[in-house]
Length: 311
Image (tube, rainbow, N blue to C red):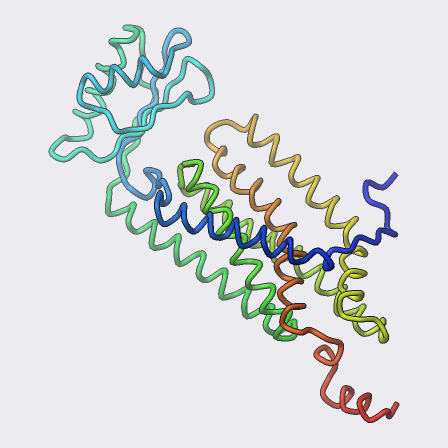
């Protein structure tokens, strides 16, 4: 039994103005959040220290935060790591304090909560390394975007290519906006998630665009809206099954994968939902708004022959 039958006939583009409104709202909200709250960069980018401490039994994080603040070590991130008795502390760089001294101060503060606390690991990232990672991460996103732009520019007509690029930008902005608004830590794992979203988004858009191009060449007497509705309905079953299976997999990863992949899974969850939506209501709708028609997809010689009525 199919989740979505093959003979659906939803009027997606008759409701495209509702999609425009939803798109504008989320894009503006994401940009506003990024402008006001920014991204919460992790220690991979900012530099600092990570300390993992194991307690003999479950411990409340508020008590750990209070103990650290009493020693002048506030301003960091305190969270459970894997189990309720393991605590991970992320502290920003401390001027004038050596790494060994700082880790000792952290352990001393955490032992005021329970004297049985034991140090599991200590990691330190210098600010210079963090700055370099930010630059490399931005370059990675830029190169991926340029590569995708070159690919769709060669594969599709300008109006379709423009819609695909805008849909890709839409998905990246939405993912970053959600990360900013809900204050998820942006580290290397999350950056990998954003890059994966870019690949997923453009793949889904290409599948829809290929069917749009085919239907424009086959449905000669249909209007552009009819052709694009038919193409979207034709690929709806495939899009739904692909998105649903990927979404469920990432959802399990989000809840059961642990803190190390939490941000990565969250970025993918938002990206899958946004990418599925943008393939229809951003990429295809923009191409339609630009006046995409059958003649745009024909070779110049063939288009001229059809205009003259010649076979």
